[in-house]
Structure formats: structure tokens, C-alpha cells
Image: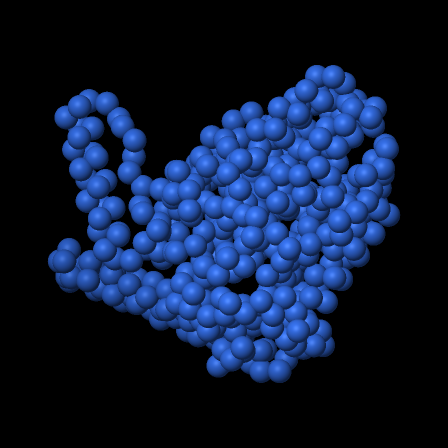
Length: 432
């Protein structure tokens, strides 16, 4: 297996090198014939190799994406003893002694407006008074999360761990060796800087695990990867400074959300969605969007003032949406900006209400919600949109290829409702 992968990688590299050589030779031919041809001939000579190169690159990307399949995924439901109801959390803030009255009042307002429910979880370390945000506790939290989630994944898929060729861990603020992630313990902030207190309000413990394969044939695959799009603006200083980890005036480390973070996220998403729309929108929606832009520009010229710029209808590209889990106000703002209705935002709102913000794992809790509701049918597409510090954005578009199992509550002796097994009947709720 390893030799085959190396041979395929070598073949792809050789093909890329051959393509580059062919393009260089074609450009050399353009220069050689430059004096003898007119402008039209030169343009033709130039466009042929460039077009061929772009078409080859696009076809290779599509072929590579088509070979990636999602076998299944699992989301951990932490034990009930780690539950932290909102009233208990607010009392906890007052008792631990590190926050002044202004900080407690600020976090209370944020949490009460966020849409978070009473069933979210803190790791054991943050239930202590004072919280034990130590490296050792972070390691214990990782063990508590990773192993049960992976056990559930391997049991659901029937795939032995020895068959896994590579493990990819989504890295966050916990930098152990080897690197692990999604750990709330080290993200706790015990100071008074309000720009660092938001993570205390939103983030909760949780874990997801997904098994993907590039095995040819696609047997046993639940979803097929249709598109992957990444946008990274870390090189922009304003973007980088909108969310970063540093010390406050008292030397306490926390994650700062800088001034203008909303504006920078908007700029990031505009660039990201422009790239994404080219690959996932159907042609009819692309044509409709271009026509809407032209009408908008003509109207602006006549009126002499700018109006709201039209957006593509992303509902033409996907039936289901998993959004960044940053609280009810932000989810609503993002969803409305994408042209989504309350039904399309329901999974994100309910996952935040039940589990809080679990970083990138929240996207899988949302997909688990839609599956538990029996909404994802064969042939449907699911768009997962993630935004992280840097700033950076990532989109995965999946197509459901497995048969519908909407009414099967068990498979291989395990529940198909995942972390929603004992509460899916209670959702959606109408208030936070």
C-alpha cells in the first residue's frame, strides 16, 4: 500500500513537471514567432498553453477531491457530571475570585444573549475553584475526549485502528508534543481584559472524530467530497491581529479578539465565498448572479450612491449547512448574509444551544443533528464552513452517497443518533 502511494505521488509529480515543461516550450514558441504574427495570432498562441494548463489543473483537483470519501464520523457526548448550567456558570464566575464585578457583569450579558442552553459541558479542571488550567489537566482532558470518540468511530465503521495510514489532529491553543487540540483547559482566561473574556463565555468541551479514505471504489463510504476551498489571510497584519494569544497588563495569558474583528471576518468571507462560488454554484446561478451584479452597477450609476451588493444564492449549491458556532447573534448575521433562512441555520443554532462552541468539532455536531433528524438524504449536499484565527476560512462540500437510513436508530449495535440520542426530540427550541 505504501509503495503504491509513493508511486502514485511520483507519477503525479512527473505529470506536473511535464506540464510545466510543455508550457515553457509553448511560451518559447510564442516568443520565436512573435515578429511574424499579428496580435490575434500571438493571443492564440498564448491562450492555448495557458488554457490547457488551467484545464489540466482543474481536472486534477476535481479528480483528487472525488477520490476522498467520508466513511463515517463520531461526536462525543461528555459525561453528565461535567454539565455546567448557565446559572451555575455565572455563580462559578463569582466564586473563583479572579474576576471583578465588571468582568462578571460583562460575561453574564454575553452568555445570556448568546443562545446557549443549560446542557453544555466544562472539563473537570474548570469545575475546580479556582480552575486548574495546567498542562497536566489538559493532557487528562485530551485522554477523556479522544479515546472515547475514536472508540465510537472504529466501532461504527468496523475499521480497525491498524488500517489507518495517517492521523490528522486539528490544532488549537494546546501545544503538547505530539500536538493535540480542541482542549478548553489551556484556553481559560482568569484576568479582567474584556477582549479576552469571550472565550470563557462561548467555548465548551467536546470532541469529534472522522474517518476518511482515498480507497478506489468507494465501498462503505457515507459521503463523497465534492469540493474543498481554503482562504488564509494570516499575512495581513490587520487580519492576524484580529484574533491572537498574548498576555494582559498583569501577565495573564488569554486569547484576544481585537478591534474590528467583525470587519476582518467579513473581508475574509467575501474573498472566500468568491473563490468557493466558482467551484460549487451551478451555471444557472452563476449567470443569475452576474446579471444581478450588472443591474446593481447600472442602478448605482443612475442613483449616484451605493446599495447592498447582491450575493449568490448558496442554497442552489447545497441543501444543508454547517456554520461557525459563535453564538446566536453571529450565526444569524452570517446566515442572513449568505441568504439562508431559519431552517438552514437551525442545526448551527441548536448545536450551540446544546453543546456550546466546540471549535471545529461543532461542524460535526451540526451534521449529527441533521442526521438524527433524518434530513440528509442520498444525493443531498452538505456545506461545512469554518472560520479560525489567522484569519482563515475553510469549506468542505460533501455529497451523501450512502443509502437513506432515517428510521434506523441502531446500526452495528450502536445508536445512529450520536450525541443527540437522548435529546433530539426536544429540538428545535424556540429560545435560548
